[in-house]
Length: 457
Image (cartoon, rainbow, N blue to C red):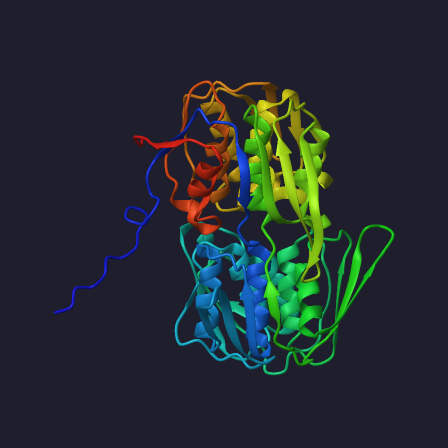
């Protein structure tokens, strides 16, 4: 009898062990940034809607993106990896097939929301499930946005996964005004609209990330974006345009680059070149803030790749100063708030970050997790309902145990915190890092970071 492979659990998956960071040498050399996660999800999805083979270089091979690839295979797309690239053999717009089993999106909120939008026009039932952190995340705002199409959600408790989604027999084009800025809801609606006959219009009073719009245009969708003087945008898309297969090169993820950037700023003597970083204006909120705080960051080798602006970042250790960050500015970098909190802990003076209520509904209550991790590391911190105040004194004592709460961004950020702390910082569990940056420890170690196994709680 063939022995069944062990089920992958948090206890036996690679990387599940407490890890401590302390005593880094100056970070130097070149740091290769992994592919952008947001663009990787979308490249796979649009490849599945194109007719023919799309090839993708630099795809982020992390758990979140691989969950999207697995779901698309269940929908009939043929996806394979060979010759240093990923190849997607698409089925055409409207050509996806009913899945034979539930789509398990792991802990990827992005993948789940994008695929819910993708399948919203289809008159079949698709069931969505996922891991423990994804099951906690609210989906009701997206479900409400999809409801006017005639898409019905069932088998759900409080608008959360697991749930079943079924589209109407004759979906009508939509007109939707985004009331609370959400790049994921906008993208989900665009993926639905691309597969509905007629002209759909999406209006966002506050412009958000535009990767989906750029990729749709690159694949040949009939899409128009008109920006207004108030900072918003009106997007129109004529559905059922045939999408053409593409050859894509994914730029480096600025949110993954955030960790070596902050590490190089806080570790004395560092001079690190972080290569191939996406510098789309909608994604540079953290870099802009670190520059305001006094960070020595230079943009080198600027060029364009696949319609996106890309650059190498030269980062040298710097004396940072605290600052006040308003809600509007914080909204441009919510994924990067954990990394920013680490920079603020090493800054001289108080940093106040406002408008962080959305962090409470991410992989964990990320706002509480950041505050608890800083407090455990002897950093002065005050947690408000929607804000965070960090009292920086130019150095961090450390010495505590930080709980990752199953959150990859919290985990990586606090490993960075310990690189220059007076006492080592210990993270209870590193397994979540595989969701977005599986080679994080190795890449940081090669640059000069020091990590060591540690005892758990």
